[in-house]
Amino acid sequence: MTNRRMALQMLRRVYGSAFTIDLPIFGQLVVISDPNDIRRLFRCGADIVDTTDANLGRVMGPNSTFAMMGDQHRARRKLLTPSFNGRRLAAYESIIEREALDEFASWPQDQTFAALPSMMRITLNIILRAVFGAEGQELERLREILPRGIGLGSKLALIPVPQWDWGRWSPWGRFLQYRREYDAIVDRLIEKAWADPGLADRDDVLALMVQSRHEDGSPMTRDEIADELITMLAAGHETTATTLAWATERLQRHPQLLDRLVADLDADSEELLNAAIFEILRTRPVIDTTFRQVKAPMLQIGPWTLPEGTTIAASIGLLHADESLYHDATRFDPDRFMTRRPDPAEWIPYGGGLRRCIGAAFATMEMRVVLRTLLREYVIQASSVRDEGWQTRGVALAPSGGALVSVRRR
Ligand code: HEM
Image (cartoon, rainbow, N blue to C red):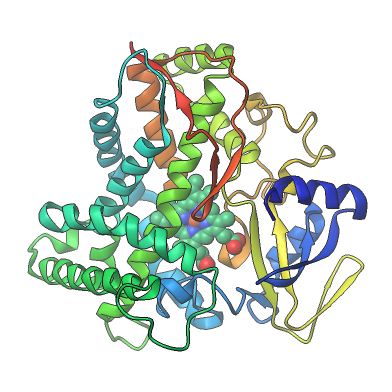
């Protein structure tokens, strides 16, 4: 329980790529890590496997993508997908560059500091602007209450919901207070959106949701919009920030690569940066497992027959560390991805199948823009300090020192 990654590696060495483990709170899990088994899992329809019954919808609310299953989930994905693709993605680049530059301006020069808190501020502001469409007072207040509310929520997600009221100072009571204030702010954002004559031209996800219609023609309710916005924030803020923190942790330990990256960017090429992002996501996946539950009477995966109700954990961490797929798998080597793009059955930092991360393209673009801005403006100083370990933080696995780094303006 205290060193999940090492425990899983050990279990794979002893039992092979698939095994069952019994965990406190979670119960029994069937862990799979063979690429063929994972491919088979991700190809299943929602009538065969879907999200687990105990999912993050408990804290995000019943209208969150996390909570939905089957046709309802498919319809919600259809509604949200346009926000995270094509033209809209390009529209977010300038917001991201601005936020990154503002935050980097506060960085000390030639002094070691932890990059993670900075990355958390950058990705929070980006989501509040690009997804919530928030500015002014609403932006300020959301910036204060959301990190606290989400931090508490991600801890509460792991324990059973109490059957009685523990009062306003209990963790659940405090969580509900945050939620009430959050709902009131979302109400104001929706009212402002309706009053905005430029609503049709806006690119934020809130604006898109306000204008969207369900298949029966009805608009999304306030509760639906509020649950979905908090879902995007919880799913996209810490995961992206933590991956960016790992990027600074990795790059400073590979000075030759850093030099090549800077030269490549100076020559207006992002090829090596893209490969480095793929390799950071492979070697330091911040979500190392994704869960499904068997909904059909039976599911056959490889030689295994899994009965209805079985919880399956597809191990991202084990797959990415598989020596038969990646030679010298623990070595950080972006050149692996210079000649080939990642194979979707062997590289799954964003999960896969019908529930693959909806923000994957957004997150990859966001990390590319933040890192490009960082490398163009600053020199990341090389470090020979030991690699940072893994630490569970809220939803993501973060570098244990918070990604200590020292920089100097170029
Ligand atoms: C580096 C950043 C990110 C990583 C590593 C990541 C990873 C993941 C993973 C592993 C899943 C589970 C997929 C599965 O079960 O197959 C997921 C789901 C999800 N992610 Fe991300 N994510 C990131 C950023 C984002 C961003 C920026 C957003 C939105 C703004 C987002 C929104 C979501 C949503 C809504 C889901 C649930 C999808 C569903 O159940 O249909 N994520 N993410």
